[in-house]
Length: 464
Image 1: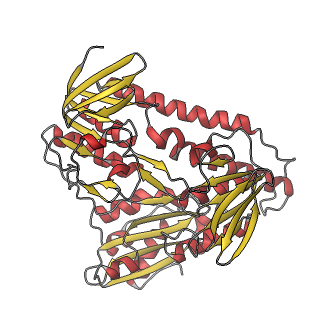
Image 2: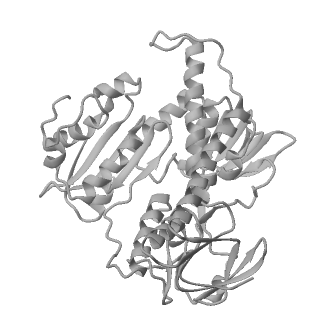
């Protein structure tokens, strides 16, 4: 095949990679992107998008089941709730196809050449690509590594058969009767909660002493309560061991004691690792930061002309962080003056209820040497939360004590994810408590809880 020369080569068409390539194309750079799978990466194909579709379907089925049972205060009654899960999966996959096809169209519109195959480095300027039609060589002035991350396996629970990664769980065509989830982080609890609502008997096993250990306990308390209401069994401080397909159980140890939980299927969600193997990393002289590729504030690696973005560069492993890095790198390669100066990267846990964090928690702010003030506003006092029957949760603001600069926002509640960008925007623009408090908020909305939290932090909340 004919060799390709270009100005910018992007390896990986996940959220970071495809955004980088699109922006580069918009800026007139001769750009090539290499991807062995469908465009969109983990997020669009086997992560963010299909999981949120499944969560929505589970929520709707749970509502229908509640109406059938006649146990809601709304006065709504319905017949027996049933789910055609293969049709649900088909709907979910249709959303994925629409989005991945959309990404392909955007790449084409921006003039980006897509090479279908697996890239391996020959040196810092050249990659060899195994394509369906034969080998191809691509040489570029600048290269962006955007290879993403992969699920971590456990020694006693390798992926395969009934032992599933998040990818495998999202590919199921029927609902498991008994599901054991290993790892009570956000991925495990998002999917575990969804399957519990769909009718699975769910057990969650976590090695740490509480669920969602990356979040402060005040935020996770409503989630724990909701898991109990859904009948999800949660075991903390335990180590998952082996799955017995014949017995339909997963064994675990708890200190010196051992036990089992029922498990037709086991979902292992103990984290993700950067995808640094299989594409010729050994041919490059890159400085590493532990498992990750070390980068500076322009996402430059230790090799001239080689950038890295997204999960392969470290935490937080979030699609929107990768997108922002990808856009920045494209503009840097095009000659614009850019650097990573973001004050916060919001994170959302799509559990029930949802959790949002942006910026610093009170504990993190204090540890950073800041004198801060903080207050929460409960959703029990928010009219909109009441009207959607979900007043569990709160919004919390953290601000500097001297000048009232907002340095962090945390929230837990149903549909609270829709406020994540609002929280991040307040921090990025350098808002003070007074800015939030004096902004006229539409009524009735969940956003009013943010205003009330600011007012309460200032010492004069109106509705509590």
